[in-house]
Every structure is written in C-alpha cells, then in structure tokens.
Amino acid sequence: MARDPRTAWRLDVALDRPWLEVRLPGPLRCLSWAPAGGGFVTAARVLWREVRDADLTEDLDAPAWLRKELAARGAEGAVGLLTSRNVARYRLAEAEVDGVRAACCATVGLTNAERVGRRRAAAADAWGTINLVCATDATLTEAAQVEALSVAVQARTAAVTEAGHVMETGVATGTGTDCIVLACPPGAMPYAGTHTAVGEAVGRAVWDAVGAGVAEWMATGGAE
Image (tube, rainbow, N blue to C red; front, side):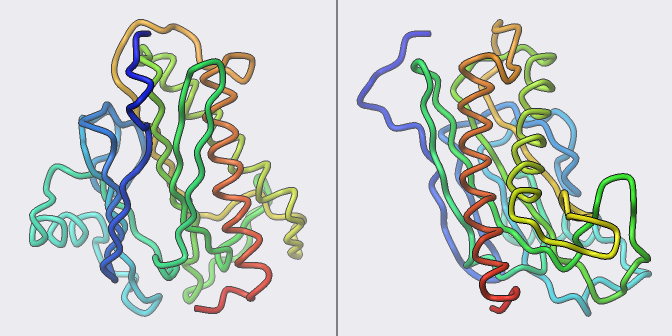
C-alpha cells in the first residue's frame, strides 16, 4: 500500500455534550452492530449521544429515537452510538505496525458489566457501556474486516478482564450493551487476524484506549 508518510492517520474528535463526534480520516467502510448505521455502511463520522439512564425507558424505541436525533443534527449518514457515560471521558490511542496504522476512540462505563456466558439479572438503572470506533488504513476485504472486528472485540475483552472488575458472576469481560465500529478503506487484503500487522495494530489501539478508560472508571467509581 502506497502512503504519504506525512499524512497522519488519526481521528478528529469534537466534543459538544451530549454529543461526541469522531471524524474518520475520510469516508470509510464501517462495520458494526450500532443502533444507527449498523452493518456494512460507508460513513465519514461516528457520533456518540450521551443519555441519562432515566431516558432509556422500556417503551423507548432507542434506534428510532437516535436516528431522529442524528437527523436533527444534520448527521443522517453517520454511525450512531448511545451511552450513559460522560462522553467527555473519551480516550484515544494510536498504533502502527509494519506500516499499517490504526486509531481508536473509546468511552468506557462498567455499570452494566457482564461476565460472558453468565448474565446477571437486568438492572433498570444500569446502562453504562463500552463504545468504540477503530479505524485502520489497511484496505481489507469484507471478510477480513469481519476478522478485524473480531480482533477489536478480543482487545476490548482483554482490557476489561485484565482490570479485574469482579462481580457475583465472576470477572467482567465487557458490558451487556457494548458496541464496536471497525472502519477501513475497502480493498483486497484477505487477512486481519492477530498474527497479521493489521490485527496487531487494531488490537493494540483498542486495548490501549479501552484499558485507559477502564482504569479511569475503576479509579473514580464511574464518577462524572
């Protein structure tokens, strides 16, 4: 892949609570299970909408509400995420491995923490979550992008597990409402596992950003 070494591959972040806007290095193919703009989409922005736990009532159609909020902000084509975490607590990390670059922005809340395979009883007032976007300049096939997303999930889990947040069901591995966005230019690179440069770069950027967010959340008890 030919690159201009003077061109930084990083995320441009704009904070305007209750919004956090992450501008990608350009229009990229994004893959996620986001409540707005999920699946494979092309987008240049990922937006977080901060909400209060009390706003997320059982009868609320959260995806429809978020789409309306994005439209009102003029961001219909963006990927949209929801969190009750103070979005000013976002964390950024970058990594480069063998010329492949990745950048991650994450917000971390663990009030809704879960141990995979051992779910807890639902709590109506617990909507803390981990939301992140990781963008890489590796030009991946769709299949390789799925693999890169799986690496980002692994890195999220590793960062949370290593922090040792213990619950009645065991050590937390994430939360029940985490959302991860993996963005890249479309291309022909067929692999993105942990044994590849792109897998290492994605994993390191996500691990660093989530790890910093988890450390802060645990040190402050989730305080604003």
